[in-house]
Image 1: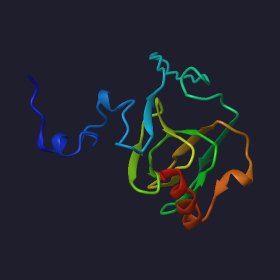
Image 2 (image 1 turned 180 degrees about the horizontal axis):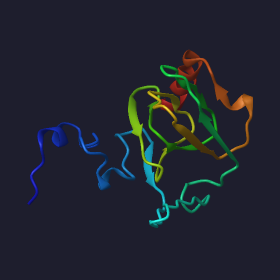
Image 3 (image 1 turned 60 degrees about the vertical axis):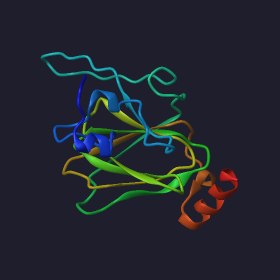
Length: 166
């Protein structure tokens, strides 16, 4: 029988000091709906390769891809929610944090490996911060860009969440 440390008992989803545990993949903080997805990784002495296929590695058909880069120190990105769009956020280079909020709870995910993606379902407020120098955030989206899909005001987002909760 394996014993658990106090930190694992207090927060079983907390990353260990040396990085993520294998069993963190696919788990979500209770009720949040987000989860880490481990992407295929082909190791090669000449350089590693990761590939992504919609409906295979991510739970939707990929309709749009965008990336954030050259984010100045101390700046944040995001600060909105989507009505319908789902996304997977990947730290293609460097590291950054993704804070996800479903209207009643929030969780900070630290991304720093290019073979892990964070699945964020629709109707979750997100913002990205703590960008390392040279970081690149690669985002796979389930829909093309549509301004009407965005909640950019947090109070409006919260009001939309209330009927869903009953």
